[in-house]
Image 1 (cartoon, rainbow, N blue to C red):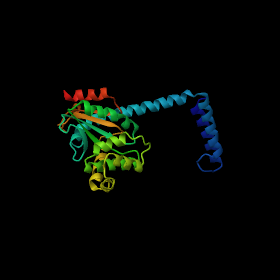
Image 2 (image 1 turned 45 degrees about the vertical axis):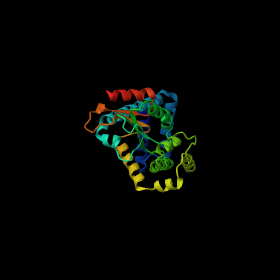
Image 3 (image 1 turned 180 degrees about the vertical axis):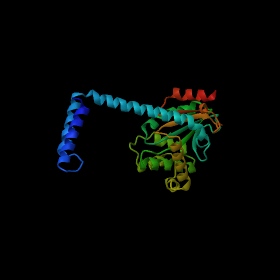
Image 4 (image 1 turned 135 degrees about the vertical axis):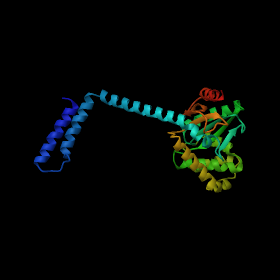
Length: 261
């Protein structure tokens, strides 16, 4: 007897019994256990059903992720100004570079940490590239504290040094003590830093980044957008390359070559 027929039979028997007893429509504990036992025994005898269900679920998740990635790619020019020309963005590399790489990241994201040498190499080896950092703390309160501290470090002209210090920290997970120790190590005035972390400027920057990430339907970090620095919202979709997740130097340079043409 197939599972559906067995469950249907048990359910019908239960309903009939409950009807005769003028009880509520809910199954009794004994009846629920009976159905659960049948289902359990069926799955034990047919484990391939579980595997097939998991494979089907994974495929649906992959298909949905591909659709989301494509949608982000297609709609990215609409947000070109916020991506590439937003005021107060932290940056490194050549301020006048003809190519801009935008990174959304979280200091507690291991893949973002792994991208640090790739970004460093990009800045050192390509003098025509500007990197824009979009603080996107999505891994809890400590991530937000780290991002606030990094944005506040801009006031003292040490954003990139502090950013690298946080990314290269061996402290896992990050703590407030570790964050401020790194700040002191790179030459920041910690008292001034703490005061600046509460500023409206930092609040506005984080809110703007969250809003932009939501509009772009980003599903995680890191996330990169590559385009010519003069890209505009009227540009075609192909003018921007969206790279979701961790990539290597080859993939990054391929994206740069593509938008440079």
